[in-house]
Image 1 (tube, rainbow, N blue to C red):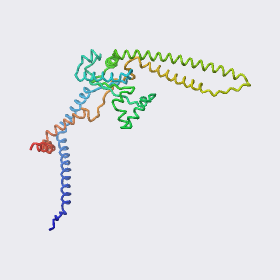
Image 2: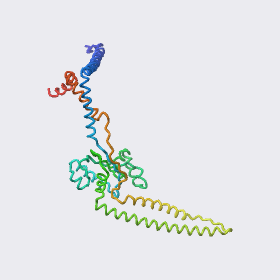
Image 3: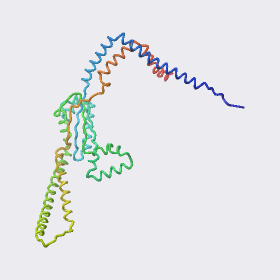
Image 4: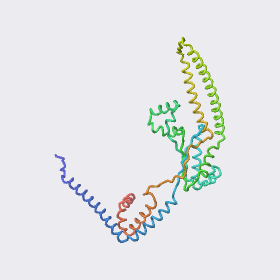
Length: 333
């Protein structure tokens, strides 16, 4: 007995006809909506212009009121105080969220605590400086990169905290000044009895090391001076040929060069050691620019027009939202 089911060859044609009908209906609705919108504008153009003008004016006022300003501080946490700095900023941010203006004004020292909206810190990725003269850091990154993405590793919180420079970003609702906002904040960061002791000892150690380097360089200069005098005296004898294969002189010169590099490094290092958290750059009152379509002077006229249009044409509003309404009702029935 045959079990074959006869195939309907007209099914594809029926499907295409239905699809074309739906497409025509869709574009027909669009054309109808455009036509109704044009008619609506012609009938109510005076009211629309008034609403647009009111919305634009109100939007300009709100945009000016809602302005926010960004302040950036590039700092260098010295004496391994990066975690300390991050903890302090987390504390300040929590107090901002709690609106604890008493803490911000009396403890931190910010003179305008009410305008402060947020504070955050981000590392400034500088992998080259991170591995320069630090072979252990290079080996660490190399080892970690074998098991993962190098970009993720460099941006990882544990790795990024060890970068030399960090960026502190503050957001305020009004303009402020360096004296009222930045300096009190930096002063608060540098109030630490523990790190002050480390700062004092580290500074003393570096100064002592510089004195030792200066002493060694003077000794090397003395050796080179004696050698130069000996060589000059030997060259005065025309019948004497001087030849020396001793490589110790080259080693002495290389040692002096390395000591000079170390000396210059420590001298520059001492410049930043005057503070626990050293500020390198400060930029204040950077206005946060919104995109045009997110500004109130664009949104409010559009909202007013849509409200007027939906109020004058409720059937259009209902038709456009009927599908969503039916879909929600189907969940309960």
